[in-house]
Length: 357
Image (cartoon, rainbow, N blue to C red):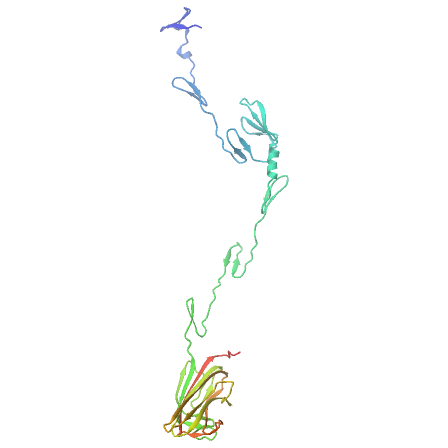
């Protein structure tokens, strides 16, 4: 190999003594100029190098890439030859690897299609899913549910479900107050008739004498008070009902012996129409007291009270009986100068109908 001994401006001398003048070199116009093509770089010092040609791939539908050069396929239609890149090929369901020159062909896996089919055949159908044998098609069955409208529910043609108005309108009855959405009990004004009688004005209806006893009655009212709606009428001893109802009837008397100086048993009782409730065990509509004069006069009081259902047109009276003898016949009489009797009668209409069972 020859070495260069000297390099002059116009000639080159080699180690064997050979000399070449510059006339033997090509001119500048004869030199070849190079430019960088694809994936080539030329530096300022005329160094030529190749750029990185690695390509990064991302897995699309049916492809799975795991690790370097590890590509997995997900699909069942593999009967055709599929070109999967420079170094891999699937042919007839088998996978082959080729070297960088595209020659050789090392089989990496066989029956890929069969293997994939086996995986797919191993699938089991869940709820509302069916798998067709052979084709392995997945079918989702209908899960629609048909609804019917129940109470207070409407279903429109567009399958909109809504609740209907369930508001209830209430009206207030007796004893009830409704304000806005608040319902409460209110004070109920009672239906009452309270009558007081004169202590001396008495009349025996059997003989029209002014004597106490044998069914006598008070004649003159000293007061007649009405509370609530009217349900009876009467200005003397008898009250006539003008409404059906369940009635509470109470009478109270105070008897005073002021001219009779001896013992006396005095009774008050209720007469309804023509029925006398004296000494009856079915209703508490009578009462008696025993008084005895000891020269300073004597006093006693009577009271009765009970409930009864009566119809419109019924008449009510408070009557008297007395006994001055040694028996219990209550068949004697005394004058209005021998006794004074203070009487109070209260009639209350409690219900419209009969609550008794």
